[in-house]
Length: 110
Length: 116
Figure (spheres, each protein chain N blue to C red):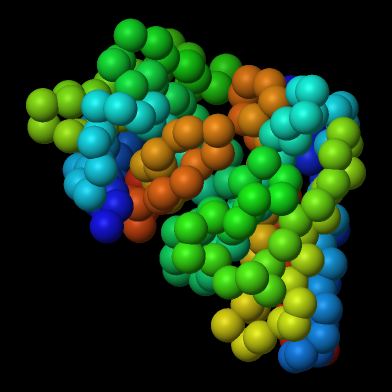
């Protein structure tokens, strides 16, 4: 299985930039398609898709969220961070079955 | 608006069975693959199973193969997960999700607790 590694937590100030990273144990890219996706989960709620295929904003997601990366290294950026963004963020790969998720990065206020 | 509503969770003894349902609305259910994803208490997300748009193909994580069965009724726009021989490690919130390249819509989840 492809293992996705995320830092457990990140502390950030409101109005600043947050950069959340995800590293895969092997490439999750096929040709020009980067098969990495990002989700936001708030306490007591279901996950919500933010970014699909590394850099594409999902429907209804604010433009302060963006994604980048290829191969094994991917980044989710939130700029500027707002209070409503305090949540846990998960990366997920669909390059190989089984689909796997990172352990999640909890975004906290500094 | 896409809506996915799970039901059927609860407390069950080890070795017993439970069947989850997920009622879909707001999109053409029969055009999409669907999946179950679970989350143990205070843990991360774990994919469980996927079924193709027409039900002809199913995929499972190794730890549930032979115990869980994913199915769908396109006429009723409903997804199912039959869970047999339940173990304590199956305790989790189970989410149904629409499975495209990513999981683009999720239900609110249903809790399954396996305990004697």
